[in-house]
Length: 279
Ligand code: HPA
Image (cartoon, rainbow, N blue to C red; front, side):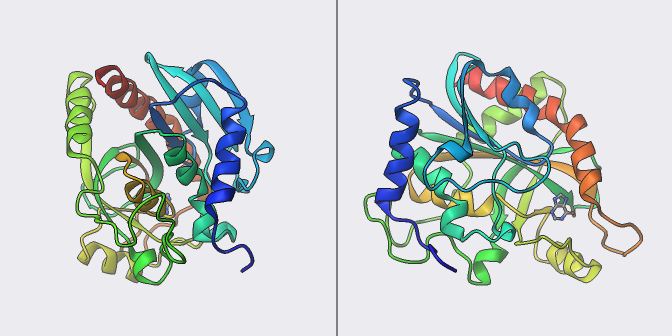
């Protein structure tokens, strides 16, 4: 693959291009996953930058991913919202997939909130549930696709970063409190990141369950690794869009994933707004 690794210069060119368009100094970067774009519409006084206008920025090719940055104010906090992300399965390198998070670290954004649509592997989960991500299984990285492969950019972080607390305990506790105050039942569990784009076989899913996964999806983990490498504090939510098909009795479709987003978005929005207010 050409352009496999991203240089600090490329990251800084993208960061400079954002700085040139807005004087906001975002405190939180927010990545909205499949079917969860609506939250960006609540951002006030927004500066909108299509991904196509930013140098080196990968463009999403997936239906349901809008493909623009919305920078403005949400619950009194300056935020940078990614309305749509790119995925490894679209053919981008891991470095390209995670360039936006690299740029966030260079912009000095201290926190990353990630959301995704995921299949529920935990048998208690039902479509429409929201899961607080307490940890992740980096299967895609174990298989050799880690976004930090290649020359380490020492200005961004260490060669061998710790991942023992990928998801920030304090932010998680705020999220639990906000969910409880709003009577939203918040599931918790381990998110497993795979490459996709094919959904899992029943045997894949039984294996993932045994390995300790509660939900499975095709994103997030590389972004979280890069965020932690760059010292950001991370909070993550999975919207459970479908029940993973452990016995082969049902099929999973992208349409179902998008549809579930309509139920999930208001819950995730309430929690994220509450966390922003509490910061
Ligand atoms: N598997 C993988 N990714 C997903 C799923 C799933 O069942 N649902 C939404 N994203």
